[in-house]
Image (cartoon, rainbow, N blue to C red; front, side):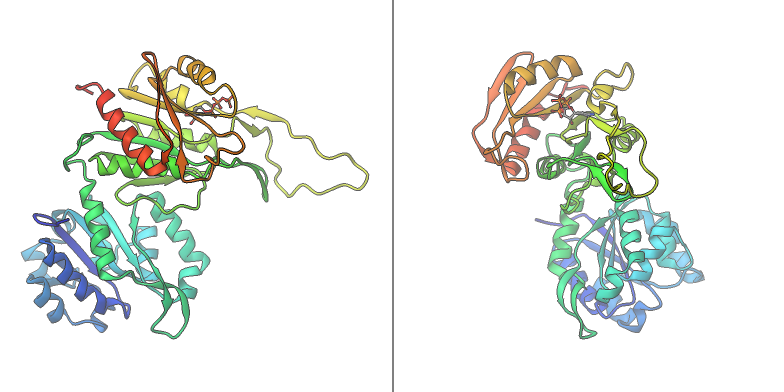
Length: 407
Ligand code: CTP
């Protein structure tokens, strides 16, 4: 693994973990990368500009309104000249500024002005990390495609214990390599291609506390996203509610309902390859109750009137204009797997159906292994039982082969 030829803009926020950023600079340089650093005013209370500049071997930037800094490298150029922007430590304040698009110092201005991917390593007190405001900001940033590494759990400088410790410099450097390795300019069979993938279940609200859902874990879809990124693609993963971390190097968009998922997929277009792995709820409740539905003594249970959800796969596969060159659907069945899969290949208008048996006893849903059948107009190919990550790598290699050369 190497960072040679890569350049990182490192933004050092004001937290005790800033001392670890000095080690991070050494690690990036050891791996062959170059570092430009911005030290926030609060950051300079913890580490000095001189130590940062000495380790980086470059001038450290601190002030938005410095005439000398602007003359040497303007804040816009600073924010764009790197291959990746890394914020470590990312304090609660910096995350809040990023989530709200504030730009009142050099660090936040560079973050708003950049056209590069951003990787953040949060570090803060456990209560700040678990505060509702930080949770909201994180959700916004994840939706915006910001990448995260850490935080770790453990004893903190303030004496409390829990999540909030900045990830170790080695782990951050690995995350930097992963994020940069997945750039479309990277080598790999999908280099230069845009891949859109849906994953996980959808939740269809009944009232403010209840929803219709299914057992999908998102493991297979998320593994496909990671495999496509490793194959050099630019990947947009549209994920329903899952408890998995966002894969490194992948733009992950979080949605709840099938309608939102369709909207996010259409927004992510155009794509060369679209893989629909999500277990989309077929129906949604006709009218979501505004308040929690209460039991009425002696009254029968309420009945739910349902409306059909849009079929996301069929909508994209039958597009007249801007159809991805290769459209892949999944078929999770409990009986007559191949018969249903062949039917879906025809009825949905896709090029490949990846079929699997999710019946009781197979432990596919939520489990770590999968037996898949590849169904195309040319026939059926059945693969042995494999870990979902291995299934993902093989499927991505297969789709890269099937992709028309001039898509
Ligand atoms: N799919 C979709 N949008 C839906 C329903 C399904 O995009 N509203 C996609 C799934 O992501 C999958 C394929 O269609 O790639 C088949 O999904 P599946 O749930 O197996 O089939 P359904 O079309 O829902 O049919 P049924 O539930 O009757 O088996």
